[in-house]
Length: 343
Ligand code: UD1
Image (cartoon, rainbow, N blue to C red; front, side, top):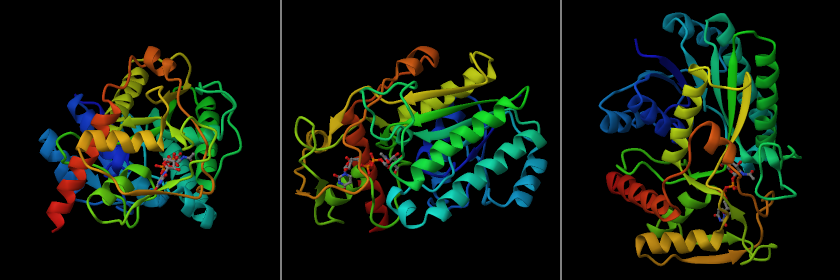
């Protein structure tokens, strides 16, 4: 029998790419998503790639009673992969309580469901944001968790601790937190990709929307950082590579290869890329010239961060395969696809 995975936020950006990789790996995928920041048509995209339309529940996982009914109807699952969360850093500063309520209530409810419905495994979406501005680079999982730059960041820090302590209190449960660096790009088929609502906050969707004419120009937030070209440095990884890491982490837990009941992995390429280098990569991959200007720094931005992912390389037998240019090229292909559909 196929092993069943409940994927919260499965119509979102990383969730949908992971659903595709799970289906390809032979899992039965059940998606829960309230479509707060995603679109139901994503299911068609998943079907176009895999030939499978996952079972879908339009539920808010903060609603415990309804979530409980869902778990009864499903008879639990082999595992939960938990993506559903608010993720806009700036918005979290303006609406901290919304972020704490949504991101933590949903997580607590799912941990509760695991116990009540014989669902022993959780894979959690965490973020490199838990490191704040690290003192030494690249960051390893042993690097200190510092002051986060935003309430969003604190929901990830708190989420990890809530999972760690809950798992420690249960004999047969296990979990993993995956600390993502900066996921970008889209599925190479262009059937699924990132669908930001309104004006994008993240670099690559803003960049592709500028190139297609939806935005006047990209603002590079600062060129006076202590970096070789003055712009911030991040570790950008392709979303399909990131999705594959979830399958690897899940299999590790299902097959009992985990070393401890709760583990944490960094997921990145290991290479730091500046904003100017990201723009150059986009121009190289697409043959376009991007209109950009340098403006003031963005509040809350971290100067530089990139991953040491050797633990994930070794333990998950995972590494990134797609290049930065391929990431940019697939993001651009996706941008064209969605705009052509809308016009
Ligand atoms: C942030 C969070 C990350 C979170 C992600 C989700 C931190 C440190 N990082 O990533 O945890 O998962 O959001 O949304 O809190 N930039 C520009 N112009 C733009 C947009 C971005 O120059 O219009 C620059 C930024 O200054 C930054 C880089 O591009 O240096 C990447 O920014 P972004 O894509 O927003 O990601 P993070 O801020 O790294």
